[in-house]
Length: 378
Length: 260
Image (cartoon, rainbow over all chains, first blue to last red; front, side, top):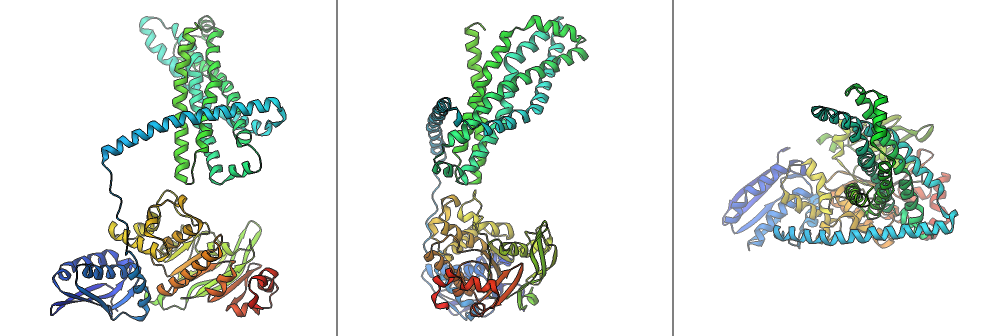
């Protein structure tokens, strides 16, 4: 038995006889494709084509289609062409293949790349407006939910709120402490290193204190929470949306905002200031350790300098920002979660968008607060 | 490959034991599927039908017994022989299991692209051919799975299962969730394809109509064993209490008055 597929072309008078032999199956596809292309010229030269199938030992859809394509290529240019000697067991398959690929729509032509870019830009602009609308809608819905809870305090989902607090607050403490501790230590080290040249080492403590309490403590923690908890919110709500759990909630007369989103956002608003506080202390502690071992400044002096350099105002400036950042992170994460469509890819895309957008907004918000506090003299 | 092709049995399961924790789901199960036949498997919900199918294709580890598919022993999904055998079967999962980030056409092309070396043009043509064979229009090929109806999803999944022209096709409840007309069409489609391509089909189903119209033989799974196997009319006469309850229950009688 033949184990290699063959395609023999014998000219007979003005016609051409093609005899495929051996196994015409998908496992041999690269050979088959080359074979059917190799006879193209012979087919073009002859007036009539017959395909003698008697020698074919095995056949599957792919092989059958290649033969059918050969024949169709011949008939389309006005030659007569036919199959002969089709074995009974292949007859059904050949008949089936004759029906397919008859009216395939032409592939959509690729649009002009410049126009494509412009159209993307336009869509993104309109999308940005939509983003703002969605953000404001979510803010309004949350406000209404809060009003509802204030009117009827029993409607607050306390269990869910506590669970979310545990997840995004308590469980986040170790990593927040570790990162802010390192950040504080690095700032102190840089301060000592550079200020030493002016003999102004003692001002390092001022820098660490003010920077950490006013800006970095809360900003770093907010960014980490956006990455850690915001992404989790988006993914959770997104997969609940995909599995129609949110629709199920609505049909039971429950408001998803009340049941799912309010506890999550409220937990963030409560947890972020606490985390920011813990983070700031850890950063100051890191700075103190560097002061002792790298800057030759004992703990007593470090604490005394810190007391002179910073006031409660600095701490207030930092911690006041935290709930607003938490609100932004929560709203972005939840509304992106609700925008997930059916596919797994959409879930991934929305989660990425959620993290990127909330980090961006947190930094913008921080900038606005800096201007605000500077102008009111805090 | 040739000597295997002459074999009488496509799937041979011997003494199969599968359990989760302490609970035994399949208990010394024995099953033969002949080449070129359509075997329907019935059983109680949660009775291990899908477990049996998933064990045969190597997705679930077994505690004992042997499984041969087309003469090749099956280990697990990480087993080389199983991976080799994988090209020889097509599987239609209950929910379709289409890749949601790929279009319909790319889904069907996926097995071709991974297993064969062929030009994009030929791949497109073959994918369209498969889609048309399962009764979809060429226009649907650029849609994403999320845009498809339940019946279309099943058809695309069938086209993907058939992409490599496998000799064995596993179907997990192919007609569940389809309306009777669509289910009937799907049955007819499976029968046609089975005849045309000479497939062996292993079908898990609850659909009595599928059992009578499509299946050559029916196997009943109860208490972790195959308690009856044979032609549909033989099963209808079976004395096993569960099989009697299944085929002669109120619901079955209502749907199939001619069975009495």
